Figure 1: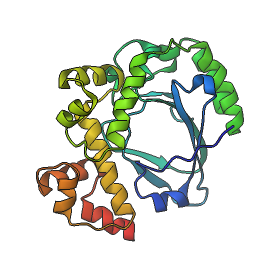
Figure 2 (figure 1 turned 90 degrees about the vertical axis):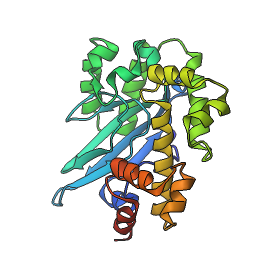
Figure 3 (figure 1 turned 60 degrees about the vertical axis):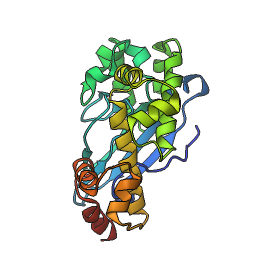
Figure 4 (figure 1 turned 60 degrees about the horizontal axis):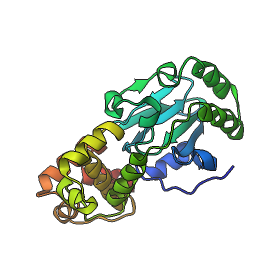
Length: 267
């Protein structure tokens, strides 16, 4: 089993989070890598301690989550995601590559944005039995050994649109100059309308929402790194026409203004 070295992008208050839980990511078997980005595991033991509420900026991934409180396929979220950690637990998840869940269900991923699919709806009647075995297994290696044969049984044909979606997403994630849908359209040589249809079917949220999400993650990461820029200048760098709209969007997604988030990071 290979442990991957992904960043903590999207995890808010990362220094505090490191004290509350352990997050590990694991690469899938080679034959599953077209569809599966990684497995991620969150473990915590807060017995005798106060509960901890973790907050995240959601990324546009679909996740198959094995959680004792709710095991389901979770669609892309448009809101800040919070999870209350208490007692002791291990949550195991299959993170599908962006766009790669569509081939499993052959219906628009946007149909369950901000929602969930039951395992039976997504994979059939045998899924519930697999879920029970995965939840009962105490090791990460054992969970992966149970999940991968199950995924292979339900593996669809590779879809070239998944590759296209990921190329487009890379353009957004790694190019800070992509700040508007029109810029992305020119960059990937697709019409705005074609991008919107593709994202509706395969991603679950609009190109505009994806661009905004990554730029706000960029802004939060800069603050977490100790950067205290001029907020008006940062707003411009993130593609906003004015500081007020940047602050409003930051607060809506992060839950606090940039200045408030900076002060909490420093505490």
